Length: 435
Image (tube, rainbow, N blue to C red; front, side):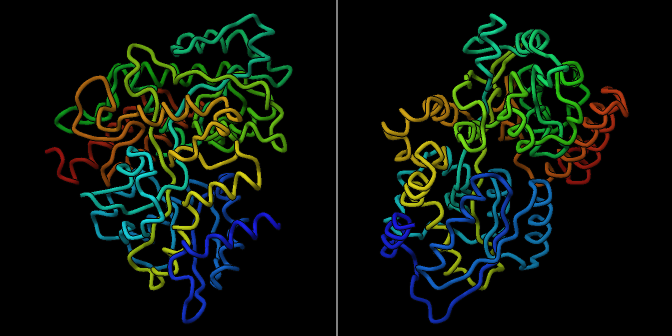
């Protein structure tokens, strides 16, 4: 702890309002991902240096989104700090539901943030959340399994190639599955991946006139492909598997391939939790008829609801937890490869790139993901694996539930997409996008 204490004490000069008239207790809502668990552990050092306390509400991803969205929209005021992402931030910022975070001081070094990440957490030129970590998506594969089978992963695979590999690599008698993909329903769970699949089959969520396109041929092809692939070569009970569950399966050596967040790469290099530390290869996200929209852009970020009465103390914490010094602190505690990825240029040192073979591919994927051009054909929306409109959370979640039903064998893909189309048309009509 000596290194930690020394490092944290050096934050004293940069922590906003480190001397408060009285100690505050802040309630923070966050997701149960590994990086946030580390943040919770290290936050005791911030508490010591400021005298403030944190009341942690750590939730599964879908539950977090529901709880936070309800509280923010109703101005319930339960939370002083919330973990949100690149979908909610610009929408909620425009609504006046979040405090601006442009005033954390020159020592915060806003210029060090990747422009794409900063822009994704801004609206009308104002920043409404600060990035904890950012990610795109790509293909991870078990090099040992591939080598034993005499297979070679191309730098830019297609989904057709992925399925061919999966067929050859699945051995359910050994609990070895050709591929692990998100099956848990939710706009930020299974739909994050399935939207990418629709994109590369040439599909869109809406046409240029905001008409939903969920029964179009690209969607039918993509979702039928996904369901067939998962039934044939995926693990059992896949509708319960989101990011964390698939990460655990891949880390245990059960998955030959996994298409998911670039942020997973660092965790797979943690010898304490991963059996595949020296067996992970990386390729670009799969394409098919096009490669446009094959990799998402996402940032998990910290924001302060406008209902918080403790904004000064909250700013002190979000500044600390997303600073360059925090990144260094995590590296000293768990090794440089565990640093929160994708937010700051300064993270990508020669030391980090040497320790993390995935670093350059991750950095490039984040920089090249373009939410303003999410699909091959022109669309009226931004966002690659989601649509940045308030109505999307409901539409995306319902669609995810319907597709999970098809994956579980409860309904056909055509029926799932028709139900999703009908729901989307109703929602977009009520919101005034279409007549």
